[in-house]
Picture 1 (cartoon, rainbow over the protein chains, first blue to last red):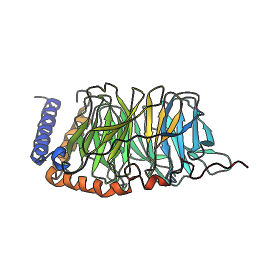
Picture 2 (picture 1 turned 45 degrees about the horizontal axis):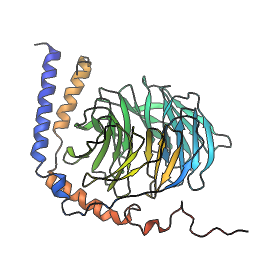
Picture 3 (picture 1 turned 120 degrees about the horizontal axis):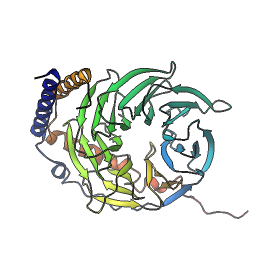
Picture 4 (picture 1 turned 180 degrees about the vertical axis):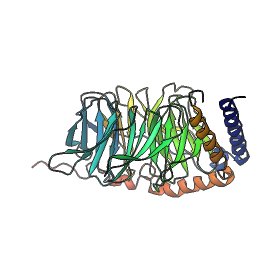
Length: 338
Length: 67
């Protein structure tokens, strides 16, 4: 048997062993564990602001840590910084490439980043008298699907080239390349303690990585199509994923397996984006069918819907203080709800 | 796996060996703890505790005055 054949067999055998280990750890399910918990109440939210200003589809948004400012990215070729309280635009950043797919706000509020089909992550300083490009991170060989700042000196990116990368913003060079996915990486989420992150990809897998040693520690399977959205639970012990297979799933990190699936026979649109309420009890998931559905994360039941967009909901974000949820859409508007 | 070359396949196998070693917690331990964590935090969750949203930055807290 050739070397390659040998290794493929070994890989299959290891996967079987991992599944057996998971089964052995599965001595109760979420329905039983959460049986004593009252179902979440029906959630009916009002649109508090509709932010108008983009001239084309919105692809991404991200809250600033001040819970008030946010950045949005549109294929009209602009990043807009909004004051969500007043609805005013604070800044407009013209992009070299209008094919933007992601944007991010640094925790300090000093920097924002964007990237997309240009395969680059561009970082801008918002605090200089005129907004300046401070770095163009150019090493991915595929589109930039997601970027998240760890600080003003480090940023994580995920790419259509199947890798994730940790960059040093002072040198503009790659510090660590995370290799393990076999499909385009579509999304990433940092753990609350910033020591690890999870990525979702078109290989229908979610992976947990150690930021410092670059290793893939765990692989979560179950989805049957691209994972477009991913988020760590605020506790750091679970993740939620959203997929083109029209479901969201919760994976328990400590038990290394899927524990609940959020799905509905009537729902046959892919999940584009998601975020969690402050306690993690509610999942806000944006879908291709123009709605954002609200799920009770412990019971697996739908408890509300945010309807109001005239096109696909492409991005969803809850600020750090959990006071509202923002949805962004291909209809070019952002809405703030609570 | 078919698209991987020899080095990539070797790395893939090594990674799977590492991932197998992970010390899995039983769900009878992890799920109740997760549930408990969420329940404790629900009091501080603006979507689940209406008292927090009494001070809603997106809603006018006083009536408009014509000047």
